[in-house]
Length: 450
Ligand code: TAP
Image (cartoon, rainbow, N blue to C red; front, top):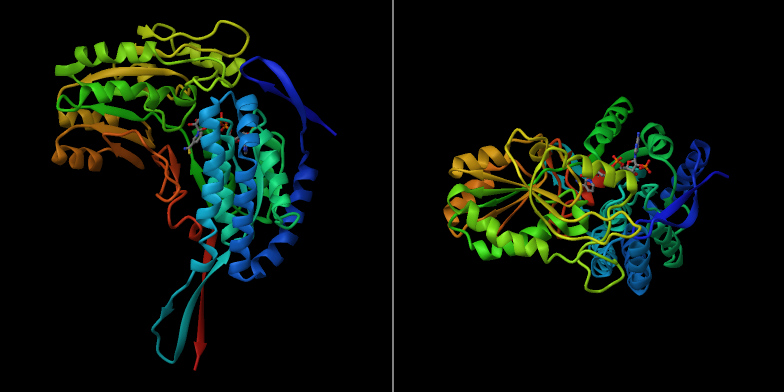
């Protein structure tokens, strides 16, 4: 059996070896899922709901263990990792309410009765990236299972440990064998098999826009629906009439959270020209105070980047960049990178491409129309923040910015009970929110002649 080594990004030391599944082993997992799905879908809705609540309870009971695994494998600060583990339990609990609410419609027709049913797809393939391994997985598997599907889950090779544990916890919670299969291995083998295998009837992909585009093309060839959650270059728009102190104090968290390896990172700060200098004066101490270090330390706000090669990529973005100021980072082993603020023009690479690291570009704008134009001057459209005390402006700008998830006078993007997803090159479809379980079903219409 082939294996790969998982590395701790805070120390650069190996943690453990994990099986690298072949195409044949992936097919075997898919076959087990096909069998398990048949009995799962035929359970009464209340039984599926109970099983998911039991899974949630087991995840909750193992929350500290999952959080510590994420600290070790992903370098997430322990406070964030604890939030992520409890979020998984909450997502499971939320979608445990779905099986009993997946009601169809009765549509008036002549000569009979017309009824719609929400039928599960069958087996759903979920491919997740390394930045938020367990939360992003749960956004797919919880509603998919609730709707009566089986799941095959492929974590990123860099961060498979919490996904493997979640697979074990599902069994401990009493979910049937084969219903939730975690398949570790490379994207080009395991992920591709999810795309091409005829028994995987829907794919959920979270990752880069380039790989997502290929996954979508592969799914199109198989006439398979796909949900895509891709990259971002989100804007944090600060108007002169905003509470500048609050906007500046919160800006580092909006981009340096998870070391900037966040699809929703507000990696462009757009500031109205008249308060540009004042905003930078306020931003600098907040960036310098950002606590970067040992992810196991409760006081840490930012851990390392995920890998040496990713750090090299992030460093490349600073070539020729106008660095205004930087925070600090440990100098030892581990893939450390200091939070960095760059002054940029709209045409600069740093203002256009996703860095996926703790680097933020600050750009001035002249007026409301200019702010909307600049915010939309990107191929992406995932998230964004708008800081203003003017309600009318908040409404106009939030309608004008082409992003799937916006917040006014806040940077929040994710609540499991509200929809999440991107426009333009940031994705296709929505996850989370009240409708997500329905997205894992196909509508069947049946006419009964009377
Ligand atoms: P990718 O390189 O795209 O990898 C994402 C996942 O796809 C990994 O599990 C990867 O497996 C797998 N994969 C790679 N090649 C594949 C292929 N040919 N077919 C099927 N699967 C394949 O992205 P990443 O570097 O892990 O993550 C960073 C990107 O994800 C960023 O652009 C970020 O913005 C985006 N992201 C978006 C969101 C949302 S919600 N919009 C959330 C998080 C991240 P292996 O790596 O194991 O080979």
